[in-house]
Image (spheres, rainbow, N blue to C red):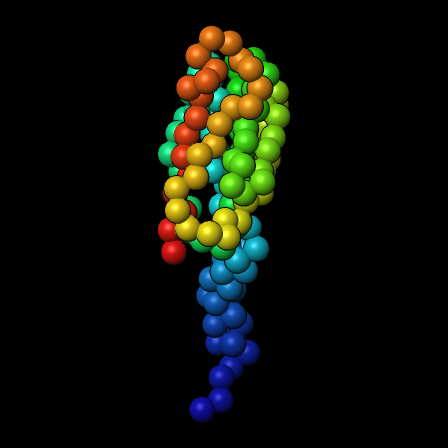
Amino acid sequence: MKLSRRQVLKALACAAPAAISTYVSAQSPQVIRITARRFTYSPNTITLKKAVPVVLELTTEDVFMGFNVPDFNVRADIVPGKTARVPLAPDKTGTFVFLCDVFCGSGHEQMNGQIVVVE
């Protein structure tokens, strides 16, 4: 069966969006937005898959804060009005604490959350 030029172009036009979408999703890590406020993170629990890269986007409108995940050697400053982008590809499963490591006032000691990494 011989296809006409029009049939070939139509088939390519239908296949292209799916191919581009697959390429883009394979290249772009998921972005997870985290908002820091005195004395909480929102969300304060994040579930990730082992070895799947993500980018954490950290913001605050309050005061200068920190973000630290000691088990993954990840750290960032969170500056009011700016976005800190932190890449993370967890290499182990379990539950890991993240915390503010810049004193931000009374209540700072309870400012933490958790990252749950599953297979």
